[in-house]
Image 1 (cartoon, helix red, strand yellow):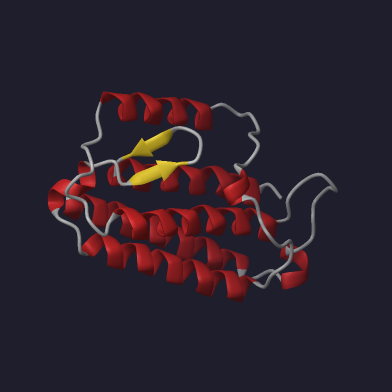
Image 2: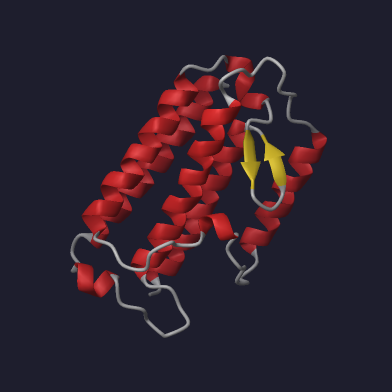
Length: 171
């Protein structure tokens, strides 16, 4: 399971790098410009994604210090994850949980690239130390649906990224 997690996580990181390479052709002024007053700029979308993964990192730092008493993810987590999948495939807008709302509204692409790469690296460092069986334990907390496994975490983060990538492309 650990090897599968590492592969999925690496694939997700490759998607992030590809997006940043594509965004480098735009100036910081352009990516900080809101398309409409009530819509997020590209940078705000990226800040939201970074905030979500920063919250994930913070939770993992606490939960992975001792995984011996953490229960295995079960049917409840599978159902919650399936509901997340359905929700993300519906073309509706959702209010971002407060923990993932951008705290600032302007930044440079380079700043965000470096910050996000560090968060991703830190998450990978934490997970590399875990045992194979830990990847099916409830070590991740989604702000709306609750505790899930690390495998569900990486799949959700990928799905979350892809949903917002579409938003970025359409901005």
